[in-house]
Length: 119
Length: 113
Image (cartoon, rainbow over all chains, first blue to last red; front, side):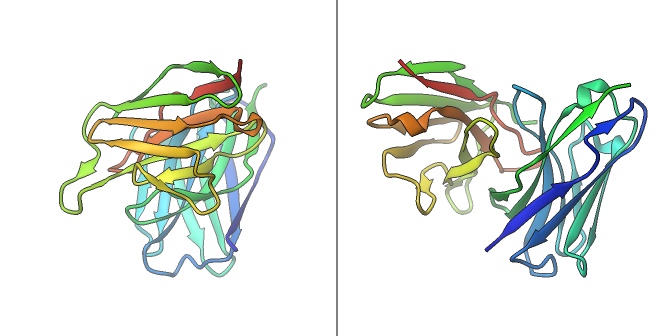
């Protein structure tokens, strides 16, 4: 049974760096074709894909946010970490951790964590 | 980027009636080498993460009621819910996974009339 859980601060100040951790179970990030990524959703708005990291350490980023994002993995801890620099109030959103297989859809989602950017 | 546009933005349908949601991509998401459409549909209820309903434009996920049907190819896709139930009230999103960046439609809010 695949599960993912996001953790991180609920509140960050403008210009600060956000660090989110996804802790997963039920699969390994050393298995061929497996990837873990992040998607966000501002309140009442649409979903936005942010980043993905694959079993072979291949990393993909949203072009519009690439300069601000870093995604890493710790396979022994079964964690994926996303950092986003220079946070702004428009980055206020629920951030979801997701599982996918290469060339496929997002089949498992975490419950999400709401991050508010405010001074 | 491939832009996904859904219509309508909101929809009110009577219980037991049919609901139809459309999704159009700005370029084809049909991969010619395997003849598959890289298109998924998700259902999101309030306070919950999105739930995958349909992949490859028309493949229903395990456990999804057969009143949910996906259709279409290339750039034009449809999610049809026959005989609407109260538990189908949600926001529905389409998403392509053809290439990065993976993008979503703006969502269609489905309500009971």
